[in-house]
Length: 239
Image 1 (cartoon, rainbow, N blue to C red):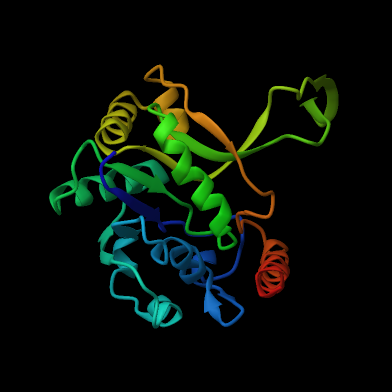
Image 2: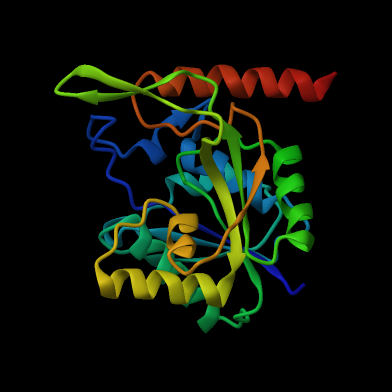
């Protein structure tokens, strides 16, 4: 199946979060959010190496490294990202290829602001790749009733039976994902996640059901929620 790599784009400015400090550097149980996200991947024996992608201005930052002290795994030197998330992922993939990764290798792309990834979900995703030649992603069926709005009022209720919430990591063959993101950039297509780029190539990635506590820290109220989730996960592991 080839080696498995990871790319973590951490170029967000945290505009929706507010504040001066980008959300990936905010402290969560004494460690930056970014360190939690990286640690969940670095500690896995099946991941050959992790490529972090940072804004140019952050390449010299060292504070997030403190949260990885004693962490196993190969963290490759960070590279500079682009203007949009998809640009940063594409640059991270290029860096992997330049450092010896093969186009036929697999790559996991994980959000820097998802600090609560469970090892069991990561294992499930990795195991699924044997039966998922067109890629796979962690996701969860939508449980809430969905409404489509028009000028702030309900227009209709959306049928939810076939709808899923897409999480990360998302896994694809490295070369194919790099090509899809390059074409998306050329065509000016909006890419909200890696699966959307591959869908434009006609791929149908496998949905791997994960846990709903794999949240993305986007708003200020998400940080205490992430802290509570991590505490609950640690207690569960200690049983």
